[in-house]
Length: 417
Picture 1: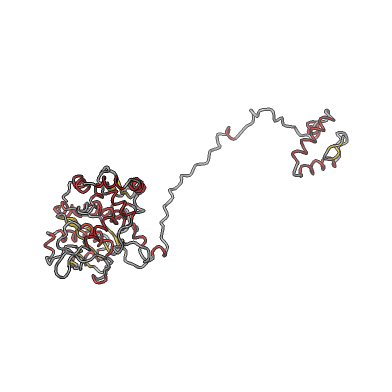
Picture 2: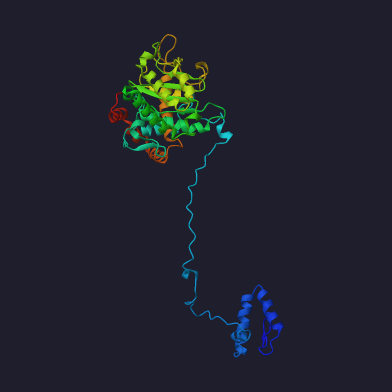
């Protein structure tokens, strides 16, 4: 019988050439099929000379694969064999992302512009938030567990209402987040919230004040980069006393202390009832643990109250908006070089002009949009969804929701118009 792969080896008088033929077949790409056909043909033609007989002739015992290997000794039966110890994975450190120079360019827009009016998206978001109909306990701003600000405080950004202190806290988080985009070579800034020392805290003992201040400063630094106080040269500390906001600025590189207040007047530090001196003393005690040399110089530094053209005499409501603008735009330059963007409140005759009021109204809308739509806000998706639903309503429905919104918001905030 002739195989398709050549002559079938004869069982009697098998020669080395037969085994060589098998070896060559095994090296072929289709060896599996060749072996199967060859074995089948050999068993049919020579049943008494099966492969098992050949193996016995050579002293090799064939293995019957159909038999279960129950008696085979495995490594599992060896008590001395131990499983390799599993190494605990060390936590992977989060990589610090450093922005390229292109994203630190001075042409990257960080400061809100006052030259242009509100965009349609900013106006729609402001109208949605200023309806005063949503749940005032809804969290609209959060930064991964740092702070959480609810709807109620953001409703205080409606024109004609004094700003809630938590809005300043959210604003500080946004400004600290944007510091990573500052131009290389510019002064690094640290923005604190308005609760570093509350009005009641100024009545504490000095030891209690430094404890409260240190706790609040650690919370602020937890959300900044770098997280060490030594990495900053300008420190902005908002203060709220007597329902009025103003800014205390510590310039550590020049050891200057500036008071930036939108209210004009020739009165000295006595108008702040000793709170400025207490804040300076508390800050210097905190700084003495980190930079004792600079702290000692600041202790003997006389604070300077800046005067600028856009200071107000009659506006006692929008001090929070002025504070936010001063935090955003001041870079340590002289007042002449300071590009704040506000128009003067009055002309040379003392008549009140309307430009500044319009700028403040626009800023309230622009700032609430910038805060809520910031990348640092983890609740941004919920805000965008709500604004989209409001924008999909008919104009008549939106107007109806806005009726008496200011009164409702003041009642919800327990605030005066």
